[in-house]
Length: 248
Ligand code: 6PG
Image (cartoon, rainbow, N blue to C red; front, top):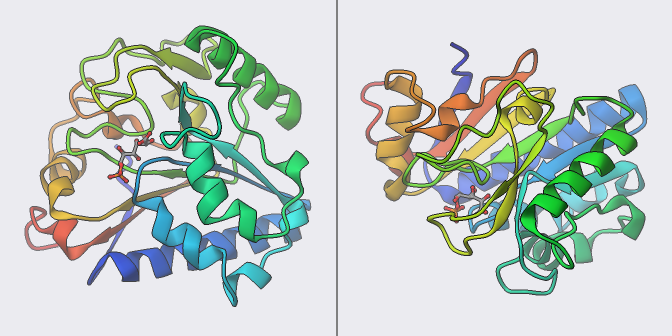
């Protein structure tokens, strides 16, 4: 199975430096090749440090933001100005600080409907904007939880990526609050050209070892289900998160 490339850095700041550098490089390459860069951000706290680096010179001026299109690999079903909103975290730490046109920012529709409504609407938006039945993102950024979840795909929840056409699913009882979310499925995630996990902190060490070195069991460790069909898979981790990996 595709486990991808692992790069271990001394601390979270060094991981954020590398993640921001790789983001810029992928953006410049995609824009040079196809005139646009499509990226799905993740939520939680880890991405903040990478966002802050991208929001300030020299990196903020290294990207043609007019050609960057931002989505979310998962989102909480809260209003966009809610403290729990992943959109709001990205706006506050990155998007408000760079000249990206508002039309290039495409959050999930988290108000006015059920999680199922939002999942269906977001999937339709993605298919329409990418012009592909299974949109191929240039980059999907992911984290993992201490339980091995990624995006909003949690252990023990119904397998969200049945062979059906599902690209985005509703999640109703996330063990990580808030409970109602939507999430990209493995089918959509694994179609990406590049997938980058950013993982820091000792509390992720056991999950990271299980995902990378444990027996395949994505129902138990959902991040194991991330295996790009044709794209690249990169794990950027700090020593604290890598401490259970043994001699690597
Ligand atoms: C979310 C994220 C989730 C996150 C992990 C890691 O909605 O919170 O999509 O998958 O990436 O839980 O979160 P931290 O970065 O806060 O450790």
